[in-house]
Image (tube, rainbow, N blue to C red; front, side, top):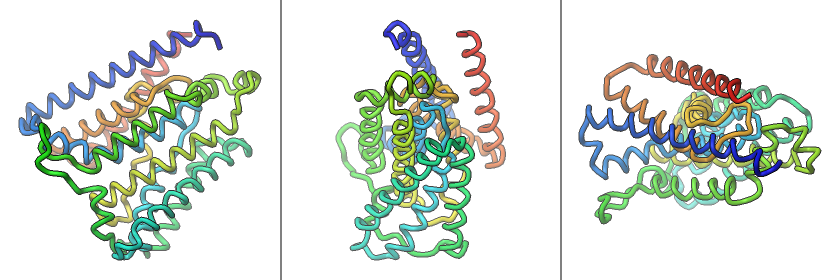
Length: 325
C-alpha cells in the first residue's frame, strides 16, 4: 500500500484516540463531581489498579481485532488462569513462579490453537474462540468441582494488591499499575514500533490483497491470538491476586474487552485502530462501571448499559465506514 492510502487510516486512528481520551476524562470528571476524593493521587492509583486487568485484556484483544477477528476465549483464559493457579500452587509460595511460567505456556498454547484453527482450518474466529471458551470453562469447572478451591499465597496475591507507600507526588504505587504500564508499553512497541503492526492492519483491511503482496497472513493472525491469550493470562494473574479465587473470575470480560476496543475507535472488521484505542476505551468503560456503582445502580443495569454502548459503538463504526466509502 502506498503512503497516500495509509494516511487517512492513520488520521482516523488519531481522531479515535482523541475521542476515547475525551470520553474517559468526561466520565472521570463526573465521578469526581459525585466523589471528590477521586481527585487524590492515591485514589486514582487505586482506580488504575482495579482497571488494570481490563486494560491489559483489551490491549491484547486489539491485536486480534486489527487482523479482522475476535477472541471470545479471553474471559475463559482468565478464569482458567485463576483456577489453575489456586489448585497448582495450593498455598505453597515456593511454587508460585514455576506455576506462573506454566500458566504463560498454557496461554501461548491456547492462543496457538485458536490461531491455527482460524488460519488453516478457515473457521471463523468467533466460532473457533467460542468453542475454546466453552471447553476451557468446562475444564475449569470440572477441575475445581464448581467451587473455589485451592489457595493463592501472599507472593502471588501481591502481584494484584501490593502497593508501595510514601511514593513522592502520588503517595502510593500499586504493583498492578506498574505491571499495566510495562505490559502496555510492550504491546505498543509490538504493534507500532515494529513491522508487525502494518502487517496486521493490512491483513484486517484486505487479507487477499495482503497475501498477494507477500504478507504472511496466517502467521500474522496466529501471532495475534497468541498475544491475546498471553495478555489474558496476565490479566488473570492480576485479577486473582486482587480478588482471590473464583470460578467466575473472567465471566463477561471477553465482551468487555471487545467493547473497550470499539469504544476507543477500533473497527470491528479490522484494518483500523491503535493500542491507544484499547487503553482509552478500557479506561472509559471501567470509569463508566465505577460511576454506575457510585450511583448505586444494580449489576444487571450495568450489563444492559454495556450492551447498549457496544451496539451504539458498532453502529457508529459502520456509519463512518459507509461515509468513507
